[in-house]
Amino acid sequence: TWRGAVTVVLPANAVANGQNAQIRSIACPSAGNCSAAGTYRAQASPLAATEGLVVNEVAGVWRRAIEVRLPGGTNVNPFVLLNQVACGSSGNCSAVGSYIDANGATHALLVTEAATRWSPGIAVALPGNASAYPNATLSSIACVSVGNCSAIGNYDNAQGDIEGLSVVEAARSWRRASAMVMPANAASNPRVFFYGFSGISCPSLNNCSAGGQFSDSAGHYQGFLVNQVNGAWQVAQELKLPSGGAQAGKNGGVVAVTCTSSANCSAGAAYLDAAGNYQALVANRVNGTWQTGIKVTLPAGAAAVGVDGGVYGLICKAASQCTATGSYQRNATVYEGFTLSGI
Figure: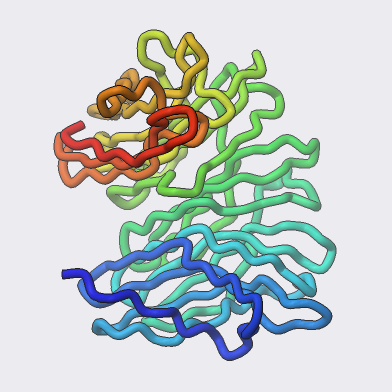
């Protein structure tokens, strides 16, 4: 039974007028015990600042949101963005995103909770080839147990190329991030991008799968899938498109990944067909190998998902028991939602 919605009680320094608070992600490791993350507008001089917030539900009661404490040397307006939160257990969670420092550089942000208490955020230690202005952000995070999480994102290297990164927390200690290796046909600037929905899944310690988008040497946008096996991230693989697939396209690529075991996963994505129409697909990883994607059969009368459509959410409780959600284009001016079961 769904209860009536309640307004989040913002931190005491929230502006009263012109507020634009948003909850971007929630994780509930047990009934009545959840953690959520988002942003709000806080009082600052000379103008209001965009700050991060985290809020906990404990034993069924939502507490007041608290402001995320940032590392030193932040911008007057740090423009905090918290993209996703994940939990190892009730009251032990981590949230990821980005903030801007006093020099105008964007850094990837990690915020960790232990026993319902949120610690000050930390900037991710980036790979050695990162630019001094790295434009770094973390898009998605997954936690296997308390203090053991993995997150993905992107950053600019010293040449200005946009690379993917992964960062691992082991026994509550976040390590230095590592650069992802894109497929062999990637452009010199692969323009790695993650959509920030549920782009990573970790079914067991040191075993994860993730997906996103990159640019190949022909200038086409493609989807990619990348696996962590026994603690080591492998070279990413290009998403294999169904018959008639041309490329992922600028609005395509892998959006959602979920795994039921270390070798069996599913991914949701979008791609361009030979006629230039965006279609939705699902792909399965079976016994460690990613299979060719399967085109989603849309509701009657629909021919494409459109530039704003595709698979956005995907959950599998067993290898053959999955549910996906997404958006498709019913006609030239109307988009609708769809559900898909039994992938």
